[in-house]
Image 1 (tube, rainbow, N blue to C red):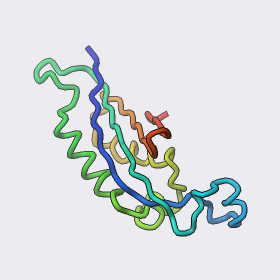
Image 2 (image 1 turned 30 degrees about the vertical axis):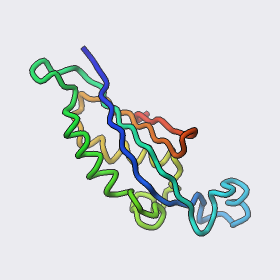
Image 3 (image 1 turned 120 degrees about the vertical axis):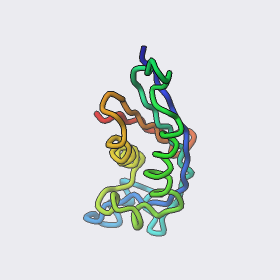
Image 4 (image 1 turned 135 degrees about the vertical axis):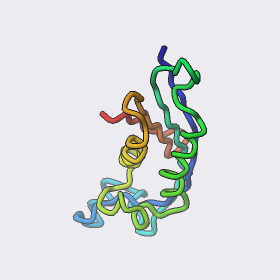
Length: 136
């Protein structure tokens, strides 16, 4: 039997959407208010979902305590109350869009999970705007 276990988390972070190789005008045309040179912030909501076979011995797909600690150490500590553009190495040359934040989150968590487990990241940038990414 397969099941999906999900854990919610959150972090607050600032970012600016822009490309260094574009003029301010082009960045403003493409990214609008998100191109603010003084940055802007979001209260991100994160859902990490792990799917796999239910272990016959433990009854777990994954121990939620392990998942909680993994999210705290790899994501919340790295992103919470940070300026993603300036303080998070992964975004040094990667535009910190919600899509890219979801991919980076996936890439930070995936190596810590057994290969038999599937991983999906759902990231809410606002209550109405969210991204899902599962490594494809």
